[in-house]
Length: 469
Image 1 (cartoon, rainbow, N blue to C red):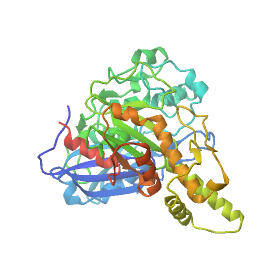
Image 2: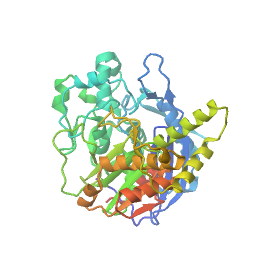
Image 3: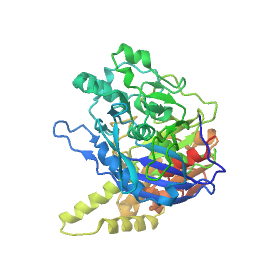
Image 4: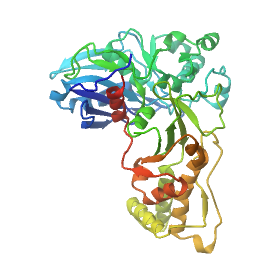
């Protein structure tokens, strides 16, 4: 069942449990505007002394950050919350015991829960599943490949290296699925196809787990969540929570990427280019689109389940603002070797100023400094070097051009046109503060480009549960 509060007075609470911080917003259900927003860092990373590839977080610290956010919201508005939407970091997995995964406490006029009988969160950044290990796993019935950091891959890793560990838990989900389960006191974790697809071994066409394939491999399928429609109500709050009344509808958790897109994609003809540390270019596929039957690991474009059975075509690059940041750090390091101290923000500012004064260049730069998921061995390179194009302006212009041209290589402008894209929404910190990157976007992609509508997953999930019927 999908939900709607359109036309109803009150607020929708949107929550995003991210990799480094938690953010909550209150969306006015009638005006569809954000009235309040709070964010706190989780500081939840756990250092592993036994495995440098392990990336885990402490759920208690994540929930503590969520509690900080909730405590900072206006109490009078929380009492008028009609729906709760939750999203968060995808792919990762946390395990808990059904009905005892948290303990409810009441103090200072607030009722809240704290984690109990719960594992550490193995995040999407976990690198313990090597290429050899992944190749030993059964082939999934899915159009998406299985990678390290994916929930099902992590369970397979535990099966091989710590099989006794899994026997202590009855449920599993993403960290945001866990929050929904605790708020609603669910007997069994529920999960949307958006998050299930991010775990691997899930067929988005049938909306079902690869249960038989997993059973044949000895996988503990009782840990798999029950899959529900994206936009469905998972349950209702079992208790008052920070003033939000008991029996308030809680949506099944959604993926943070899909919610970030929803927060700024206002038209079917929009594509969203988000560039912060990394970069993503995405657009909504036509309603009749169905993904291929099997994954293509060499393709730079993946298809993520979205809403109403639709898909997002996504070119996710590992190279975005981090490339420019690396260049800045390199210059800073060089200058320190000469005994010079220059603030990095001043270096950045000067690079932009120099490149703006150099509107074109024949210097060519391939900016895949960190490789790409579909081509992990690719690296950056510079060509067409001459004595006349070695200024800061030329080099910075070529670097910014290379970053954008890499995106165009992954998702060519002609493919955008062929699917009906008419406008690009430009967002993200790297793009919003770099006029040179903006110029290169407008040069490479022959579409109107709109800036200033930054993606926000917490806002997006609130909008979803305010708009869906």
